[in-house]
Length: 279
Image 1 (cartoon, rainbow, N blue to C red):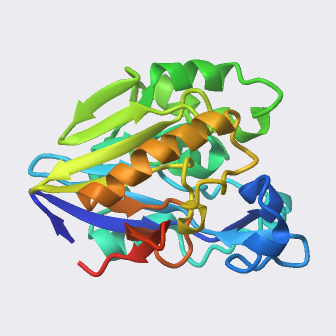
Image 2: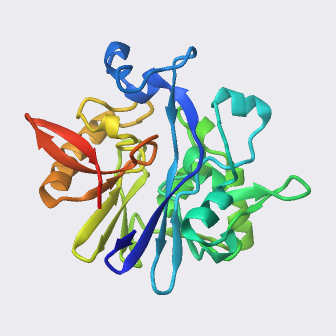
C-alpha cells in the first residue's frame, strides 16, 4: 500500500509455534486460550510479519523472519510450517528479489527476527541472503548478542549476524537513529537492547512494536510475554505508547500476529482494542 511517500508491503515468513504460557506470562491459560487455542503440546500458532518499505532510493526490509537453516529436529520443536521460501514471498508480494534489497533493519537478533539474514550455501556455510544490503543493528544489541547470558542465550545464533560482519555489510547503529523517514529506537522490556520502529509519512504513522506487543492479543496491559526480561518496563511502555497510538490514529504492526498483523487501536468500554486496518 502507499503510505505517503513510501510503499509498504507486509511479507509473512512462515508460521511457527511457541509455548502459550510463555507467550502470555502471568495470564492464566483459561483466559488466553480463548483467543489463541493451543495444540497438544501447549504451543500457539504465530507468524513473522516482516515489512518491506520502498522509497525513491532504497528498498528496505525490517526483520527477516526465522530463516531456513533449521534441522528437522528444530523444525519439529518449533512447529515450523513453511509453505515457500521467504524470497518467493518477497518476489510475489513486493516484486523484487533478495539482490534488490538495499537495507535490512533488525530490531534485535533473536532467531525469529534475524534468522533470514543468512542462508546456507552449497557447502553448508551461512552467507548473507541479501548480498547488496546494509544490515543495520544497534551497537548495544550486537554487544549483547556476542555475549548473551543464560536467560536468553538460546535465542542468539551467531550465523545470523557473523557472516555480515565478515563481509563488511553489518553496521553498528546508535540506540536511536533515523533512515529514510524511519525512526528506530531502543525500548527496554523484552530485552534491554531491543528496538521498535516508527515511520511517519504523508501525515500518517506506522509503528512496529517488535516483541513488546507481539500479537494483537497482547494489547491488554497485563498480557506480557514470560520471555520479557524486564516486564515492568514492558508495562510502562504499553501504558505510554498504546494510548498515544489510539489518540494519534497510528497504524500498528504486530510482528507475530497470525491473521491481522496491521491494525489500528481504539478504546472501547475503557479497554484498548485492536481492529484490522481497512485502508
